[in-house]
Structures are given as structure tokens and as C-alpha cells.
Length: 196
Length: 267
View 1 (spheres, chains in turn brown, purple):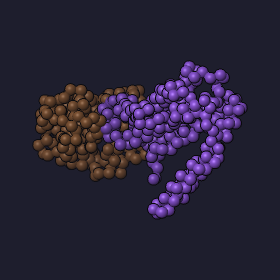
View 2 (cartoon, one colour):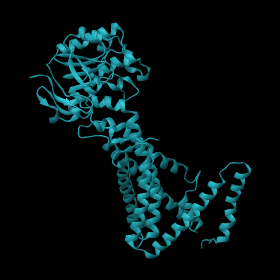
View 3 (tube, rainbow over the protein chains, first blue to last red):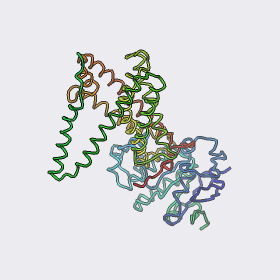
View 4 (cartoon, each protein chain N blue to C red):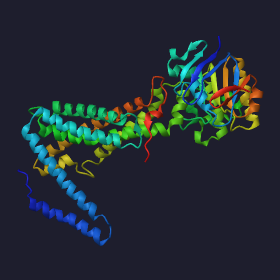
């Protein structure tokens, strides 16, 4: 049984998508901006209406509520949103050790979101998503604003989580990221997934 | 003490003040004299009209007619609440939300006041029911439109933050709670200001009217206090109902944020 399975997932904008991803599997999807990469991830996360079905460990998402699905299949947007002025309010408990691994100062959690740089926010949003210990992580351009050092740290952390069983579905316009992460690669063109 | 009655000559004399405004507009080139004249004439016609209607309704003293007049006033208020926000819920949703908020908040507070504090004989005596409904509708209009507008505006502006929480598995109601709080808080602000200013900065309308009509000031004050409490209650109810109904219309069975349930209006 696969961790994640898409069955004819489609909307007015994109699809149909059929794919399977095993536990610990990594699938990187590349494609130019505007190819519908974010649209695709939002459909999998059930943030936008779609037809077809998505299954987690063999169980259709129709059998669970939207929030229950999204707390297991977690989407992190390319431009993360914030619902409080303070960084710390977005976490149950500040993941200081993990933050340091990603090159973030521990004091960051006491700061205001608007004082953080774009790169800091992107890493904070990743930590916020990982805090849920998701079964599937949907990542939208996770290193768009990061320098090579921070990108390497993020990729190492992601590989580690995948070794522990998390499945990763990642979209990026950076082809080399796909090579570094391992796993399989597809490209999105005209609202369809194609082999590379 | 009987009230001092006004005759048309008194009004005509006071009307010269409006003419003075018009002269001012001509001399200073304000270009507003035409609008002054129209607004003045409109005010006179509207008020005379409502006076005639009320005289007729009071004389008839029929529950159906009283209810009918109140219903028309409530519909006008609901239309106004629905029309004010710059974005609209699809399928005339703004008006459905506004009508529910107006009907429930006005109905409950007016019924409470008539059944307990005022207790006219009969209960539907239009001399009490119509003015009471009118004054409550005024504050319901303010609070309801602030509540609705805050939610519709906030859902668009705070979309990224709301969807970030939804994407982390937070229930829709929790993700929208800050917006609900803000909407109700804003809806309650006018009545807080009104109560703060009452008697010190302003002499509220009901009290002034009753004093002019010859009522003892302390009696008039008691009426005014009652009315303020009614307005506070109806404002809170109108804001919370309008805001929560609007929030409910912005989602679906999967607890997504559905901004496509808003018609974008080309301004």
C-alpha cells in the first residue's frame, strides 16, 4: 500500500493527475513559473476544490474532515502566511535545536515576523510544518530565498525526515535540487505531469 | 406642561437659515446651493410623508399594519447593510446575511423592551413599537454593516495567514476567529462612543425630544438609559450575527477558505 496515491485528481485548471508515492519517497516536480505547480499542491492538500480522489495509506480523504486531512498532508506555501505578529505564536514549542541546524538564531522566536528576512521566514514556515510530523509534506519552492549553505541544511533535514518515513512532494524550478534530494523527478507542463 | 406647537410660519422663518446657507454658497462660489436646496426640500417631503404615515398607523392601531411598517423599515436597513461593503457574497448573500442579522437583533431587543420595561397596552401599540424599532434599527445598521464589511474585507486581506493555518490542519472556525473578534469589536465601537458622549458631549435625541415635549428631565433620562442598553444589546447581536453568517458563507464542506464565493465588483 502506498503512502500517497492520487487517482484522476483534477480541477478546471489542471490534471488529471495519477501518481503514487511510497513512505519515505521523494518526488520532485519541476516546471516553469505559471505551469500550475502551486495549483497542483493545493489540490493535493485539499485547499482548492478538485475532483477525483487522494488516498493516504490507502484511506480516501473523503472519509476524513478537511482539517484532519491537512494536518497529515501538510502544505507549505512558497510565500508563507502568518497569522500573528510574533514568530513564537506560530509554534506549539519553539524548535530551537532544529532552527539552529538551519542557521536560524534561537532569539528569532521572540521576534516579530516582519523583522525576519524572506529566507528566515521560509525556514520558519518549514519548521512550522514539520512540527506536525506530517505523513506527507507538500513543499512549494522551499529554498527560493536561501543561500547555498542554508539550502544544503534544509535538504539534509528533509532527507532525514524522509528516512523516518515522511513522503515528500516538492515543486521547484531548480533542477539541481531534484538531483541533490534523490528520489524521482517529473515535470509539470500545461497542467499535466510528464516524465523528465 | 403641554408642548409648544409649531405652525408653518415658524418653520418658514427657520427655513430662512437654509436660504442663508444658499446665499453663502453663491457669494463664496461653493457651488453647493443646488444640492442644499434639493436636500432641504427632500428632507421636508420625507419627514412630512413619514408624519402622515405614522398618524395613519397610530390611528389604525392594527398589529398587522404596525408589523408591516416595522418590516419595511427593517428591509431598508438590511438593504443598506448589504450594499455598503465593497465586495459581495455571491447569490445576493450580503442581503440574506443582513436581513437575518437585522430581523433577529431588532426583533429580540424590541420584544424584550416592549414585553418588560415599557409594556404598552396593547403590546403592539404603534406609538411605542414604531419609534422603538426605528431607533434600534439605526444602531443595528451601523453595527451590522461594520461586522459584515470587516469580515469580507479581512478575509481577502488576511488570506495568506488564514490559509497558512488551514494548511496546517487548523479548523476553519479557529482560523477565522481573529476576524470574527475584530468584526464584533468594531461593530460595538459606535455604541461605546455614544454611551461615553451621552449627556456630556451630546444630549441624545430621544431625551431631547421628550424634554421638548414637556416630560420631566429625570423621566426622559430614564428612557434614554433604557434605549442605550437596548442599542448596546442590538449592536452586539447584529455584529456577531452578520459576521458569523458571512464567515460561514466563505467556506465549504471541506472547511476551505472560498474567496470565490465573493463576486468581485468593478468599482
